[in-house]
View 1 (cartoon, helix red, strand yellow):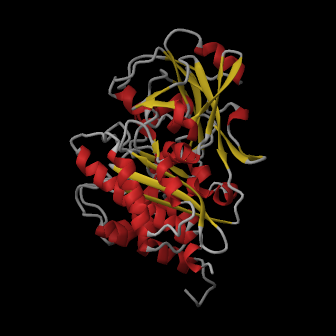
View 2 (tube, chains in turn yellow, blue):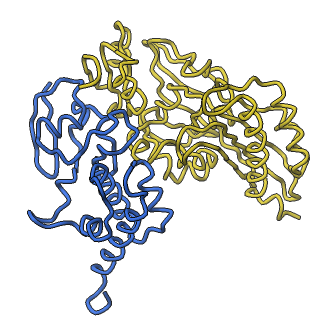
View 3 (cartoon, one colour):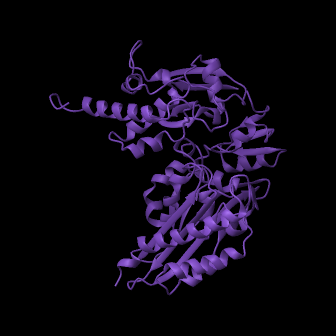
Length: 292
Length: 163
């Protein structure tokens, strides 16, 4: 047995889980695909694990007006194949095959990935890019945080220490023509990305970009939305030189991460190229090039 | 803690510490040593088992989390004692293994693929085993084995005369 000793509890509902979280040194476990390796290496030694994976009301995918709400313990493999997500949050569908491998997606949850806040996490990148809202319970109170405020740094979030993420709400665009793009580089497929970029673009009947959202992941301590790039694309046909210049300007201001695998300079260069490609993919899949 | 596990169709009640992984439980408590302990932190895939038909890393699941699921290990694939499943046969024939350490995980990952996709492309096969590391074969014969097994299973399901 590699992990240090701990107690295991499986609360019946969220109220019970939140009461348990108030106790000393308790950690939530849902899919456990990041926590258990940390425990095996004894980098994490929680006294008590609170297993929320079977609380009935925490696993769902449903449309609520202009958003799609996803329960925190919804398994990643469910999102990968969900027809509502494919239609309403196509960017999320697009990134799911890149989230870990099939065996980790079979256990890993959407809330777990968000709460873990790895800088290279694809679900977090989509949440920031589309401006998702994260919903949590802390004791008896519920709270909400915009994705951009939720992620504070690598593996660090604004979630209260005794809080439990319950759902994430992704806004749906109602435009008739929407396209999405996602690109990442890593040493091997499905390994942690060195740089990633996501884009969602709505075009009108004339192929003019009406609305855009662009974000980069794995480059900065948290996923980063590039609002100036989105603004620059509006009213254009997302021509490559327009996209390239807007991305270059936006990335000039960021301080990329640097590690053994990818230097800051490499990350900046790769992110710029990936962002331009993701924008191009999004514009073309929106049917921009084929409009009048 | 006491936990009831359903493994290869049989129910076992075992007494475990919460920190005992499903992998260690299968190997030490149930003497099912087919799931192998490799990296023991979710990277290598040697410990792959099926949980409700989906490939899962048994080193990343505690035994106390595994009640209520149908768990399948490599020991549960053969149709009868002394026989092999079509995938196991194909691995033998194409030399889809050398040291054999990754083999149970590879076969279970492939089994899950073929259960959902009778005619996988090479890319589908590569994706299905991408979470499993083999340091001997270079993967080529493993891919060949899975393609051969898929072809045979499709043949078995054809009406007589068309196989």
